[in-house]
Amino acid sequence: MPRKPRTGICVYCCSFGVVTSDHVPPKCLFPPNARLNLITVDACSACHDTFKLDDEYFRVTLAVRDDLPDVLDSRFLREQTRKMLRDPKSMGFRAAIGKATFLVPSVSKTGERIGERVGLKVDAYRVERTAKRMIRGLYSKYFQTILPVTHDVIASLLDMQRDTSAFLSTETQELLVLLREQGTHQSFGNVLEITYAKADGDEHASFWWVKLHGTFNFFGFTLPREG
Image (cartoon, rainbow, N blue to C red; front, top):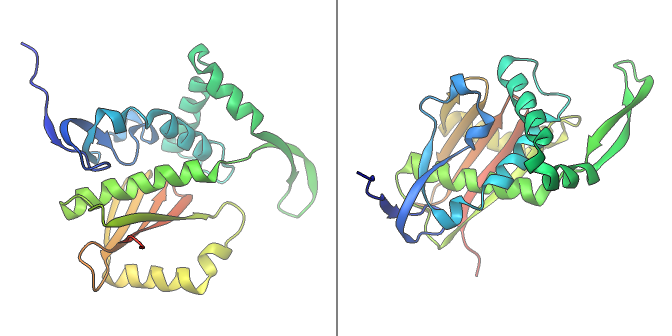
């Protein structure tokens, strides 16, 4: 007997109807042995079906980083990305990634140029879109309520690959201190770390720090919509 469709409210568009489970962060960032008790939220099919390509793109931007830790979880990330890009069904996606690659100088730890390597021009808007989706989903999961349409999600990407200035700024340090003092910390193996806290003065305002695979960081904020 077919299972009866599950109904609920989509955490992304707030519509009521048939919903499915959406993983936040995307399930493709986790190796199979680390996929127990992953965070899921309700999403309508219209929203859920638009996420797959963004999820794959997000995984690629992590997998190509040269500061990705050499651990089992990160090696899985790279291998899955290679398999996906070799898949004939991914021809269009592979072509788009190819157009965004370029050669950059490869430098040793002593500053000596030792050749060239392939770099990827990252679509920051697309990465930011996935980061915002994560914050919206995490907000719904941990605060047990859907972020109302009166509030927006803002994501501030902290790319720590070669430049620590993002973390050294006064504003970032103040946020990190505040999160350490007031925030709740959650860790999911080597893949995911989350620290979050409610902001004062607004029941739906919150701030977040998310770290993926020990290297990619971003801040997230839920704030009242301007205007």
